[in-house]
Image 1 (cartoon, helix red, strand yellow):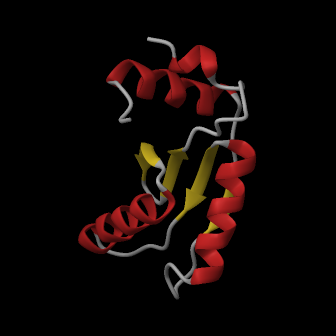
Image 2 (image 1 turned 180 degrees about the vertical axis):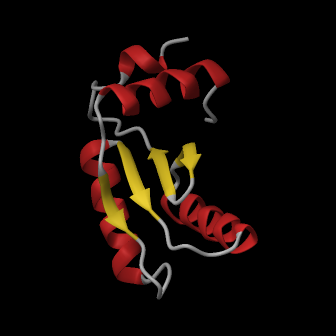
Length: 102
C-alpha cells in the first residue's frame, strides 16, 4: 500500500528528528547481492533507514533507486544529494504507527 503525502512528510520529519545516519553505503560496484542483503536486514530491523549512494549522474541514480525500492519493497521517503531515506513497515513492530496514521 503506497504511503500518502502526509505519511511521507511525517516519516521525513521522523528521520530528521531521529538524526539518522546512513547505515548502508552503496559503493562503486553498485547494487550487489551483498548490498541488497544488508539493506534488507537494515529495513527489517529499523524500518526507516538512510543509505548513501555513489556519485553518479541523475539517470543512473534514478535507475539505482528504482531497482533498490523494487527489490526490497521499500518506499522512497526522501532523497537529498547522495543520501536516501527508505521505509518499509515491519508488521511485527509498532514503532512508526503514529507517523503512519493519517
